[in-house]
Image 1: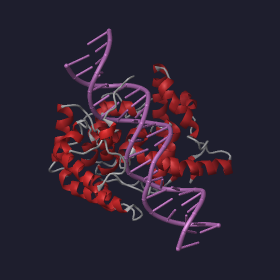
Image 2: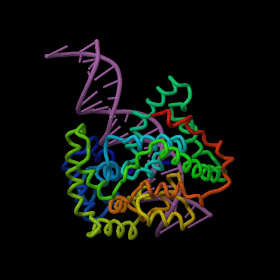
Image 3: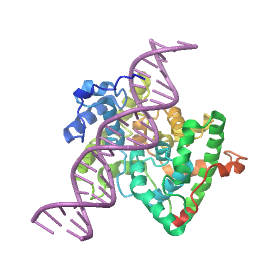
Image 4: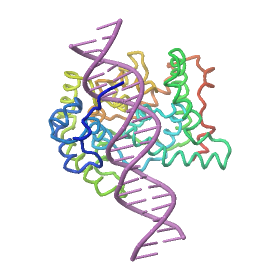
Length: 319
DNA sequence: AACCGCTACAACCGCCGGGCA
DNA sequence: ATGCCCGGCGGTTGTAGCGGT
């Protein structure tokens, strides 16, 4: 309480970012890596709140972000995960490395929720559109569920997620969208739908500018980022990074902590996987996901808890 | 051609949790 | 052990663009 605002509101510019501001931000991050957001406005001269800078970077400028046109596969995954995890967008986003939580959240609110609503109106089953069965209610559990309960939930989530993934994958025989790292990067620059606003293309250009910077060979951005985050404060980490690199994954495994559906846990386990990590080595996300979720060695005996989470009726009906 | 409503998405706000002194 | 700082997260709002009337 009484927490001072992160920025002096009067001195902070609000509203849409201009290309110039984006360039300033990108240039700074190119040099220093993401992180230490507090210092960004000061060092760049941007009249923006540090939070705003971070958000702009993570949601828009960060390379490797795919925009628009959610594939059917992605939709399915989102629907499944939303049913499983509720509105834990960051956790959901961790399964869709190329998407930001904001994007997914928006997509859910604008497309999927409506779609489900229509479905439930027409089909009766298929989950309550508003937040999904697990949605509204489940989200609350994050806040109110006692620790033990949370732990059980986590196990259930893992189990159910694995199940859901099987379903999702079996629903669509077509191979999961191979998400080659570099393709995702270039897609951020080039694959944006033409429907994007004019300015989107300038952002793409910025992303393109970054390509050289975050090229693995150079590793400059990553190195810088890592250095920054470890030297000062681990930051700029996106939960999406959790499934991005084998390193992260193995860390999760070896650490005994699966890429938990809980966003907070995910992030806490992947602090070094900064946004840069997400960009530099976006691996075959789905294969990672599959291998984890489908790994039979993980989590046993929680079948009885399946009831805890109320999945959507039949996801296949959704499509 | 003008107006209106809807949609999609970028951005903001407030709260929470982790790390550190 | 405690308080503060900072970053992350989810909910909500604002607004530009688009289509229909």
